[in-house]
Image 1 (cartoon, rainbow, N blue to C red):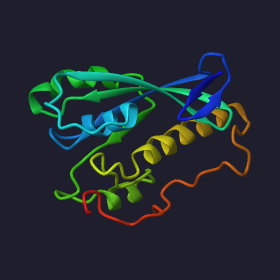
Image 2 (tube, one colour):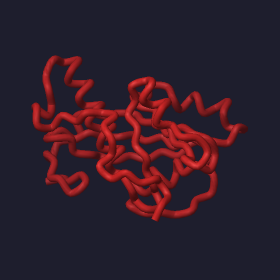
Image 3 (cartoon, rainbow, N blue to C red):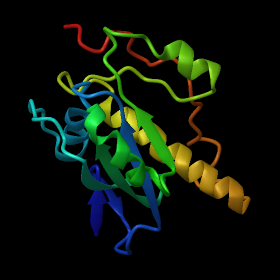
Amino acid sequence: MAQADGVPLPDAAPSRVSKLVLLGSGSVGKSSLVLRYVKGDFKSVLPTVGCAFFTKVVAVGNVALKLEIWDTAGQEKYHSVCHLYFRGAQVAMLVYDVTRKEGKEFAESRGLLFMETSARLNHQVSEIFSAVAQELLQRDMARLGSSPLGNSGAMRLNQAPTRRTKCCSH
């Protein structure tokens, strides 16, 4: 039996595939965030050239969801081609450096999911991707008229994180 994040999954292929793009300025930690999530490792990496591609299968309830994660370059010289990677994406994850501008107000004013994460400290990295996966599956099932998680598995987006710390504090 296959496993995703330590959770046994049916032997069948993932029943859902979703495209997620990471957006943000250069050197804000997009690549570090996705490497921490997919490989469980933190490294200082060179700037992304164009786009990097990762996949991860996650368990949401009893459903296997394959996330296709596109890590786009943040440098301005790549802006003209990055829009090509956005096509067909169900999720755009905005990544920024919290020392520059706080995004909580922006997210709340638009009804968006917001979490402060730290790839370096491994703080809320898997939680943000899990929340996104749950939201994707809930939206899919809402279109079909059923709930994949039942009442007990519902997750309210925009709720305050359980641990209130800044992303890079010790």
